[in-house]
Amino acid sequence: MGIETHPQGLSLFGFLLALLCLAIVLQEALPPARARLLILTAVAALTFGLGCKSDLILLFGAFPALLPALRPDLLPASPATWRGWARDWRRWWPALQAVLLVPLLASLLFLLLRSLILQHGVAWLQHDSGHAVAAFLQWPQGAQIIKQLLPMASAFGMLTALVTGLGLLRALLRRWTAVWRLALLVGAWSLPSVVFWFLIRGNNVRHMADILLPLLWLGLAGWDDLRGPAIPALVTAALVFDLWIIPPSSNLTLYPSANVPESAHDLHLRMADLRDNLSQGLAGSHGPVCYLGNATLPYLELLLWNAHPEATLTLQKDTQTLNLADGRMIHFIEVNSSPQYRRAAAQCRRARSLEYAANGAHQWFLGQEWGSLPFHRRWYAVRYQRGR
Image (cartoon, rainbow, N blue to C red):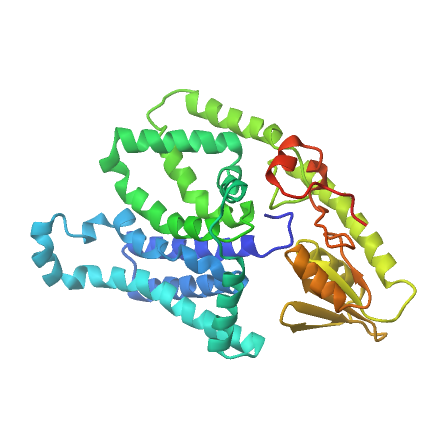
């Protein structure tokens, strides 16, 4: 996640920090003032995480699931003890209040802060978010199912996913009673996001990284009966061979590779191509230029803004416009299909794209190293054509 210019890692940091603060509050007998400080820290961290990436809300089930995972003594031991447990509410109510209040307060603060930053009402922004989700929501069919499921394994690394899956099976078959509380936490943390991203067109490894993390913990717990060097050898072999199973790629989300240094090198080469394309697009005319696509647009915007720090950025629907000091305007228009490209290009006097040919045919730019691999041609409808 560190190679790509994206706030996913910062969002995960805020989420994990909030969980850590709550875990300390639940497990340790703290003075009230320190407990309140940790709860406020958790709210601030989670608000920060939401501000970086709002789909963090899909992980919120992890907060109430901390109670059975960390404090089973606060729960009724059996149905027969429910009445006594309810009468003894003063013992468990502070803990329940903490795990519910943190996500609730962070959500409210996020909605208010986002409204202030973007200068739009909360209702309008929520409607806009719903519209964005609806644009990508679909039930996958055929090869699309493979494309949606593959990141759930490749986010681990393929062999690491296999070791984790077998460990999960061992844990559930060998000692369900010992792992059910952790399994509840894993399900509350991971299941909503797995279902959501399976139904969102264009699932990728970045979406899965924080979702599958607790599955890795639970999967390794299933191997803890092995003694000696077996587990270190198994994990080391999985990590080493994961580096070679998936080739390096400059597309860090659709074609993930555990070989991070070579993937970063490929991305560096693509960035040089991006710079050349920007120079060609801005040369010879002072009229507006439109760049159309999706994955390449943030890189183009970043390069251009770094070269012109005095420029201003405006946003209107799916178009971001960078206004340079000399009066030139560069429009970045998000398109996700050939028909969308053709419609947008018809409205632009000078339309350029690294992802679509002039006739609207889709072509790969990031990840073009994979163009000659046989399964690329089988799984993806459009074969790689060299970009312009």
